[in-house]
Image (cartoon, rainbow, N blue to C red; front, top):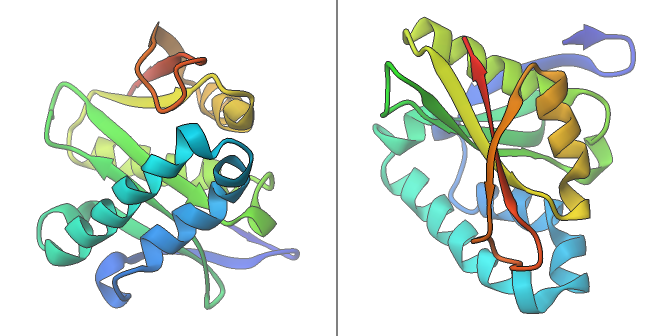
Length: 171
């Protein structure tokens, strides 16, 4: 992405950064949920810390499938994906953009980058799961805008009042 408002958007390998960055991004992105509904979302913080540790302790495996999104030289988000089920499908993991940069198409650009990486790996389909909690409405709209369609729903997420929603797209 190169436009007057934003400058140059780049995707950099996570191994150029230090442990704690991913958990920090997730904490910032979900701060509203953590403060408004701690009963349901506070336990997710432990998972974010574990994810961060897993990535940085395994840079040659898990870390290969995480990139940091930079606007010019500023880190503004990250995305993660799992190609292990290939060639049938790949899984989109975290798609995190810091709040002050959200709703400007950067998350969509991250998704498109992951889909392109899947295509290069010969992956035939991408899947992603999010919640139907109102907080995630922009994410759901973004996935639909990228060409995904809803595949199924189930109750199992951090907040049992809301379904999890799986989307998929053929590549």
